Image (tube, rainbow, N blue to C red):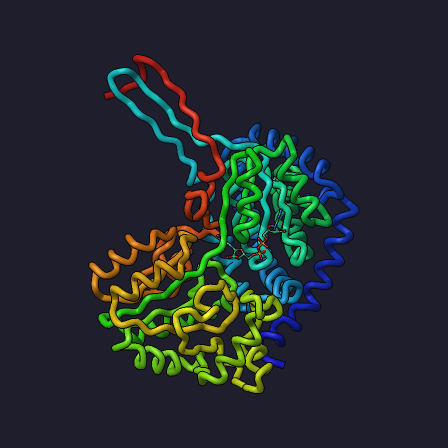
Length: 465
Ligand code: NAD
């Protein structure tokens, strides 16, 4: 049994005990989990009105309680996420939840502003939308819930989640924990909610529900399209295929470490993680040897790379879901390779039209493509990003090259000289979000994203200078 599995097993006992505790809690009072969408929405409507009657300082207390509950139960929900979904790594889920609990902005994100001049004063405030319907992905069943709950409640909304059915126990347990914290902090029951059995039918009911004022879809392109067609205000956070471009001016050792870390966090299931490396030929050998030097990467021979490709890509050129988010040990074992526990990523040299260069693999198997020069690398990077406008990474010490790639690729997140996750605030400046709205353009969502902007004008008064 590897360390990842051992860690999970240790926590499983705690999970079971906690589940029992919550089952009994469920019979004693509201849990935020409802049998039907109607019940969840009706309770959310009432809860949202009650939230608005409370002072902002009370909302801050509620947000603080959500953060603390997420941290207190982090081990449990992280282990559950890996166990139920079969994706990712326990220690990385822990990091993800800490990040969401501590770096998702609260009410400070909706501070009003004002215009003052000869004609008086105009106040601009960020008002809530009401009740938000949030569809969450299998890849981040805890992080997205924590992040969305903080952002949406901080903005004065209630939220009805429809978690991914394959991670529903984890997401619902997380919602229950956060809900309990809200109620204990004096917040209204039902402020964050879910149906007990989320599926595509309940997702449809949430999308259609007349009392849901806004929709937020975090997932693949199809679900983003569904909410965009709803006729409601919708935020779409879709798929990416982030290229990591390395040019011949880069600090190659630093680039290698960053790429290995960024691509292997949570076994590559983050939408922001490096999905293919594009490297200028002159430094390609050095990059590969520095990647191996980290002790976390394993270089596949061309024959092994072909075997792995046949395993993880279907004849229809689709990703084989059985290997998404799996540890590299499990994937390599399928072709008879055993690597140590410290290994995190399989790497191989690939030709340009290799399927793993173009598909969002979400597993720790990384193609590396050589290009002649940085110009060719930029052109190819733009092509493989495929207009997702999601994330791109560049390793370079040439400001003009970095500027050229950033301008050409037009992604929501552009990380320079670091691992991709620096772009979501993990070891990088700025707030975090696990709903990165590329398709609809809001970027890394925060409380302000879930508001509507209102203006109040007082004529000829209140200018004090
Ligand atoms: P998914 O699109 O399969 O599911 C996401 C959510 O949408 C789930 O709750 C699912 O039940 C629901 N859903 C899916 N199809 C639906 C439909 N037709 N009608 C109504 N609801 C529907 O995505 P996933 O496999 O859970 O997550 C992985 C994908 O999400 C990857 O492509 C990844 O890049 C993307 N992702 C993006 C972000 C971001 O912030 N941009 C964050 C995390 C994941």
